[in-house]
Length: 219
Length: 219
DNA sequence: CCTCTCAGGTACCGTACGGTACGGTTCTGG
DNA sequence: CCAGAACCGTACCGTACGGTACCTGAGAGG
Image (cartoon, rainbow over all chains, first blue to last red; front, side):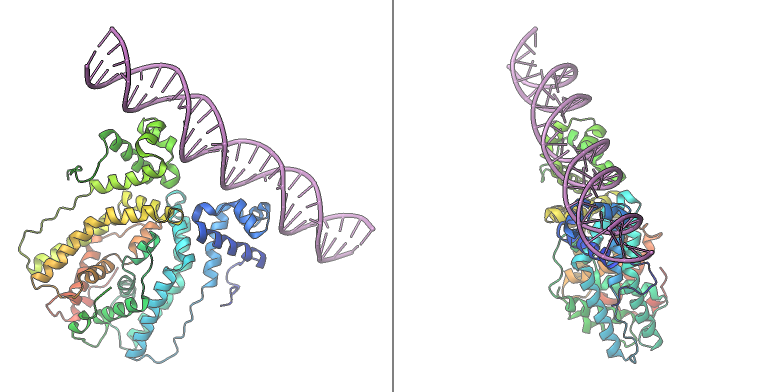
């Protein structure tokens, strides 16, 4: 939860304050609402300071991504001994968290911003967003996969492929639909449970009769 | 493949020509490159005509989506008798087509456009894109699911849920990554095959030893 | 007390966009 | 041949943005 871990050249408190306002503006009104004048007014600072701190408008955007990423720290409690039940709970927790994060206001706004800019900036923001925003959650997931394999609870050849399978089962096309404006799911937990069930049927060790999981349909 | 089926109030040939240029501009330069003046110049028409035909800039955008959707007609050859092998081939074909469509220039550009506008237009474009663009492919997939069930080759309670499972297995987070500027997969076929294998392990009737499919890892 | 630095506030500039108006040209139908 | 419509090209208007310049005030340090 500590924003500054001295591994990245963070911003000053005042600058963080400004970036917070920038995120607010972006969430509320999208790309168009995030103007330099508007941000200066909302954050009670001068445009000149904005340009001194961030260079130009693009600099503000990249700073916003870095700032937002610095706020996210995944609680990685991976000390516990892995039983099948614990693994299942971890996976479900991860699925819920994933859906929660992807559907969050700020995440959606930043993704929309980066996607909108992709066509004209050579995906600079996109790369940044994927790297900064995704690394944390990917690491957590990969750690979970490997731990499951070591504990003899999961079977796969390629952890990355297995993770992407799980990701697809959890998210499906939900992320894009939310980016396009659809409301999220009513029940993230249910979706996560279904995804874990399917994933364990594919990569778990215990051979479930596949019929057991087919009764859990409904979306 | 016939663009006009008289079920939608299509545009005149001249207007289609203009919309074609609009799509070209959008693909090449994104949102910002699609200005009314630029479109008028590129399409050799007057701005006044643009406003007469489409109302305003938003009208042009919605017309572009409708026009693009009108070009897509899925070849639905569902007359054949379904065997397991045929179903598998159909599913793989569908997966390949899906990845192909989602990764196409025009599709990505339109999705980026709609996503970029979502924050400020109440997801009008997004709804339109999902409805027009997705309906065709969703119908084809659902027909495939139901046919597979009727033929006793697939088992599920909820066809929609099964379809979304398949969708997730095929696409995973690829769509969003491509929207963010990452290049697509080198080999769509391989991805489709892996997805079908997993999907059949979950919802097929023949009980494959799950190990058979775990050896096919690698991404 | 003086000075230097930093930051806020405001005014300003150039540009580029969406949208409108107008004159000239081609096509069509009688 | 003529009248009307459709359309192209261009010029124009208001606006709003990104970015810059200038002035003011508040602390910090000597």
